[in-house]
Image (cartoon, rainbow, N blue to C red; front, side):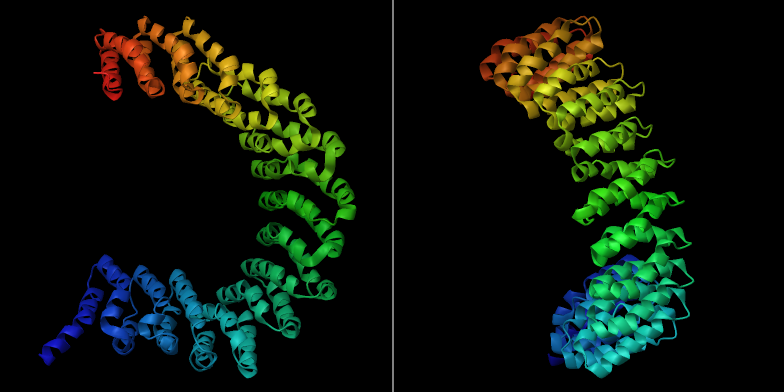
Length: 589
């Protein structure tokens, strides 16, 4: 029996070996995903002595299988016996950290970082740190790139001699011959700087930062810009000017647009890191240059940051800096040749009104908003419309209506139906921002006019728009302003407009409630069941089905049922079909 037991306990690993040797990738992938179950079946000791060595030896497979393995091993601590045995997971992960496929390496590094936290300081020096050294001095660039992500997790918890070795390894990798390794080191420079002692940040990190920021490869230089934010937050104010700013100035004027783009993209973070004084003297001119950059991508990234940059300027001279330095550049961008730049600016420019106040907004910003509202690019116009509320707060509704409303009305009547459609979609938002009185006075007629537009998509959107407006302004408003106009269309000579009445009733019945639906809308629907056009008649059946749940049972029996029965014996097949469907849905049979 003992022998049989022995065979039995070998079973999980035998199955795994079979599945991992199977030709079908999916099978191999599934068996890797079940690793934790197999480890549980084997117990902690056999997982350490049999499963992990087996996995370490068989690492040559499809990338997706290796990726699954790298992920699984990061959660294996308890399955090998807890933190004191966690170092057993290092050999397979070390092999995975050297493979060619980046995604697998990254996942292995992520798992290594995770389990490094579970090593005791002693284990970290005995097992983990030697692994990092081996990776850092590996022959292949793949292992050296993986090492870059591991320095910062073991540095804080090792002795000072080991710390010195780690710093030396990082220095070496920052000047590696292979650009991919330098790129990996640059991407981890900020993270590594955060765990270093301040003296070493000044003595080691700054020189590495300067070297990487003037690397021959732009992909390395742009990653150094990212590290600049972390480094600047660590240094005392007095050291920034000498240690960081020369490199940052150089990056802002780099010959590669990608590096300048990165500076523009990180501008608000840089601004917070370097403080108000350097911002005023250095970053304002740099920001102006980025807004005028010859590459559209850089201008767009900088335009995106306009509001944030202005908000973070020191309050005492914020307005003066914006008016003299930033606004002239913004005015140029409003008529930029590239639509992405204009769109990026339109999404943030309205925010300047709250910073600059009423008079400046009316004098300087309103003309820009108007120009953007008339821009040929729909995205620019919509970005302006969707941010109107912050301008409304600053200059008030009257001023806004005199200046911007005519432009909105113009768009609402645009010859291109897609432009009209876009404005309809923003109408509920506008209505909410402008209030009910103003809406009735200026925009109500527009909303009604869309209901008889010659394009179906516009009529449909206008119907939906009415429903949202009723939700915003309430049933009483609907009863007084919307319902009479909608019902008036039931007698329109054009059958398409008569159908629109039915669509509106479908949309409004729920929002308006039972009383208005029964007293005002239902009689109109019932009357339309005698329409000459079959399309209208079958839509009457569909409408009755839709508004039925809002009506009480008495109304359904006495008023709705006879009409549906009459339609169910109509000469037109479609009318019959929809009438019968309504009868069964409303349970009137």
